[in-house]
Image (cartoon, rainbow over all chains, first blue to last red; front, side, top):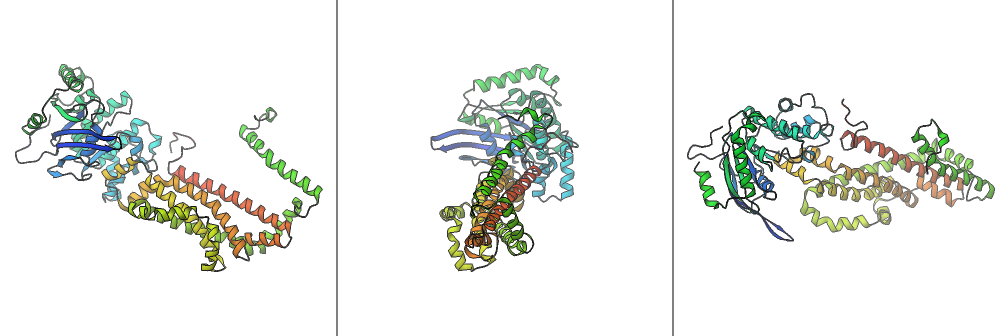
Length: 279
Length: 269
């Protein structure tokens, strides 16, 4: 497990500070997120879970700078986020809509790099490496349409990796692939974190996946969301679909997170905040 | 409505094609039989129309009338498409400009372009510039509206993608936005192609001494009905041909862009 305590006076990589979001619709105001505060330290994998409708995607869009919070702020290395920050990549939930059908696999992966003025040859190199690391060697010239759903999601992960972000955000990244592919993709992500030195924040509705992937799990309450609890996952690395999931500690942690999602503990926001800040 | 069984080994598609050809062939034969029986000068027999077609539209007739018409059509169409596209891009990306110009654009779109012919005649005078101008005008607003709409109605996921990965400027326009709007733009270009032919004919009838439209109207006024029919035949063939060519080009573009399913799905190059 990576270090979670940052030296005093230094900012965590990502801080969500008393975030709130209220949507104003013709039908009236809808308070999706009431008060969410948590920190993510460099190198960590943090999952955000919660009952359905708990504003998980709203929260991730705020973290990605795609949505302005009604109040509160997001700090990336201490710098307030106003719009999508440099050095953050997002793997979208719906790969079929986030890959451009008119570009090849390679074209899709190199597009963000070319926008960042990475020279053509270097961009292609980085893209090839990223595609190889997700097991898509030799598929560079194909169109996304010619790939299976799982492979398309790998392209979208490769696009994020080639971008070499400090922070990788993922919105239900494996929600729309079959169970087998899902396990493959989960096992793909953890070694990539080491290889690329990234910090990963993922939103998921799958408790097993959250516990399996994460160093910590942030549990949201039913809407309007607050942080019910932050659960440490001290499972040993490297994790494995068989050994880790048979570990009795995995079962206990899973049980605990599941209980929290189903019956959130009434925790005062202030105490939750203190717990995190005093880490 | 099924293909006759007697077709036997003939492929089903050919059979379907033959079935579709029945009505047009019957109409042409019916016209021929009726025309030769009636001996009415308004409705000449097919061989006479064909004869007039060859003398009017091939050889010197081609260079004098057909070629200028086609050149004006092409020039006006390209000019209208290019300017409509450019204007649509501006409006699609600048909501404030769009809001300001919206009433004007809606008004111009409902205005039949041929209604403005007198104005174009006055401003541009007689000559190809008038034809080109009025054709371009007729194409411009449809392209403008559809390009704007195509850019605006793009999937919001593409906007998120561009924002997160900081894809901006010309790259965003050319690689993300315009390809996404391509179905709208191509549909507008197709609609405008037939409008452009219509406007070309009418503008030549009103303000030209040469060209397919001018010659066709002149033939009717000078009782050369074979020639009049030959003109209408040419325009019909031209319309069909342009539409067919456009369909081919459109499919090729969309397939190349991966917006149409490939003929053999899952084919690996």
